[in-house]
Length: 621
Image 1 (cartoon, rainbow, N blue to C red):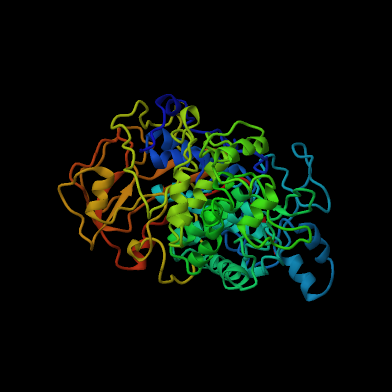
Image 2 (tube, helix red, strand yellow):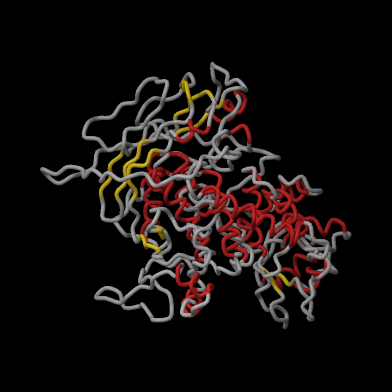
């Protein structure tokens, strides 16, 4: 069924955040435990995706704006752009202490480290945490690679705002420059060795993929981000997918971080692997070469945990434990266990002799979990929207689309579980992990109410004051535009997994009801949001036009100043009959347009005026 957030929940959503406030973002992202920002999309964005109410829209933008308060914005003073690791291959944050020492020599390498060394923070009346020899920013809002949210993917996708384009680029740039320069291959941007935790690899891959796919092809860093993704996928495929000596379980070599059953570093977390399987699948859906083979190599883990018992007379790895917090995957000598049945026996010595899901097995399983267990109940807070079965869902959903043997069987077993997020813990108000496979089923999108109790309004300004115009600046230099093979020319790649792009009349009917005009295969229908505009006069929507353009939004704060004009890259756009034109309707406007004919059409959609992010740091040569 479509997910529908509670009205009381929507009514309580914050609509804005104060300058430099972290808003609903976790202030110290590395804090353990469930966070609203963790998942394929953060909570504020996933709520908007399943139910595009104007209050959810404002909540999403407020929390995306709040990312400006984190120290993830590093500009190259020569270009004004986010730092490029291709231009600064020795730049690093996590390895800064070593780089600082290495920069003191006279060799060519020392000079390279010195040229790319980030300036450290200095204590003053407000900051007292800076330490000589250790890199810091003095910022109480702390980013973490393994807990970072999707930065600005959907906000940029639905607004075209230059500020969100900048956040997308800053996020990808920071993920690259943060890492150990040697482990990432300096300018190659390799993810695997440079990010230790499996969940860190997952979310870094997502951020790099999103920036590479969505940034305009002429953005100077778009080719670099694309190269980082392609280099990382090739690295993973060489290590795992195409390596006959890789472990048989579909696991990352550096993912065994738990000491289990008297051993040392012999256990791993399935839920972290689920995150990586999802991210690889996300990259595959967006058309990145090498992503599908890597996803398939990873997906055999989720599929194996769900179906292994079926090939062993009910006595292999029982799917009820597929969502366990951790499992043992190596033996006492540190060698990989040869099969999922062996993993099951090592992790749960008292269970393999009992048929999966049998009364006797459930009785023994209750002793293992130290909780009552019912038939078909998966491990790890099964009724929670952030529990381990919920984490498992995003991995098994993308595994189901792999085409591998037993992939659909594994998903159907998962769907048969007896306890799911429900009641106050349902996915309605917290849909971060409510991901379904495309190849099995899809539900119609929830229809947001036509009238909303909260309307877009003009900003409240003090008497006799005006909105400050941003200063005029030159557009940063751009590289030669490249022919895109991802992104706006939608028919070249798969559907975006979050923001629905309708490409046929039948699919449009599935999501928006019967339409009187069909969308031909040579046309592309797009969903675009109703964008509140700060004006001093009542607002109205233009009934129809050949080119959709939003009035520039002017927002002034101590955090950032931004102004944007968004022009659709599509031509001859017409509203589908029956589509709402009411500004009070928070549902996206549904139009049908001609496809863009040249990369230049796409570039016309991105006209930067100004973007000044909070806590921007400058790289000095």
